Image (tube, rainbow, N blue to C red; front, side, top):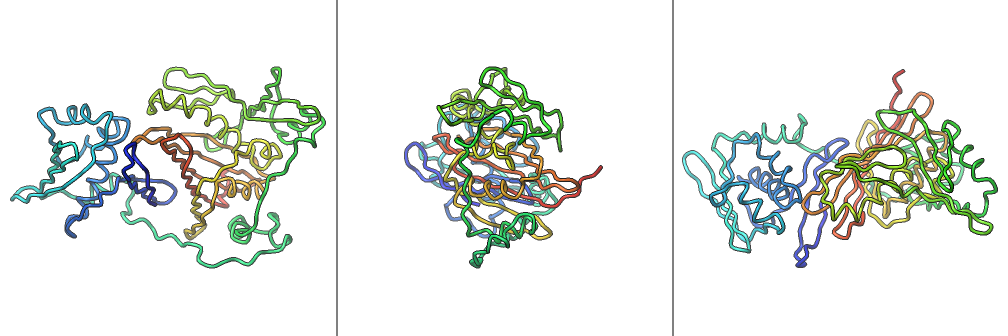
Length: 394
């Protein structure tokens, strides 16, 4: 999947996200300059390198170069000098030259600012071994994704009843249907009764207008504690996700006692995005309950859904809330667990993932969700990898 971004000086940058099974295994900043056919494997590594060189954390580049046989040469100081020169600016390639010798193949990368960077590969370099280790997978080729190419017939209400269809069939059969949240602000009379009814397995506690739905249970290491803030407006109720968090060292502590590691995001960016995390956390944990109608965040974020159900299938949605409303409709008798992980800033952009489980009596569905933020710190890309009907091991 390729995303295009604009730099501060309006130059176009293409970033490719490589998927395998349920996760992204690689990111590359696409080099658009011509490359000989017999050097395409070199090009892949150079694109991986360029992506990490232009990210916000030196650690990602160091990790890539720790156990490699190719050499990076830049001025006299090597990697430290390279990072020092480009910590605040991008290394943008203007030209690439290559030179063969008896023992190696050298690539000279020349930037628009006049800097030169040389990467040298030994002739004996084993690309297949390197790329396999890099992906932490045994398969080098990303499986082909089956994409929806036909227009489904609009089904009847009876045909789309979640109780009558497996999840995958439900998603396909409702692909053209519009789902909307239920407006409930004027329908509630007793807020505590509402919350207890929707979360019967949770303990309800209250501090002024803050309500905490606590549950010590976990599933696959994921939690389902929900914290909300309630406001009374004449004859209606407003319920929002609890916005509170504390920054302690490299961790973000939420009202739900969730602890999010944020050490790979710079402080200036963190101030812009920290408020998203409690919103996303409690919104996902409310899926399948009427509270979700209050906590859903409307968006227009293009979303890709990869379904794993014996074969791999793909559906694309114009917005993330469009997908969530379908899952919410289907999971109304499930217990939902959700956590946020792998929050990091790479290539100047913030990425993180969510792990989601919808648990029934003897089976569960689970998903890994990748979120990407643009330069304005708004979510601009969501990719969900969904696994259905997994058996619960007792």
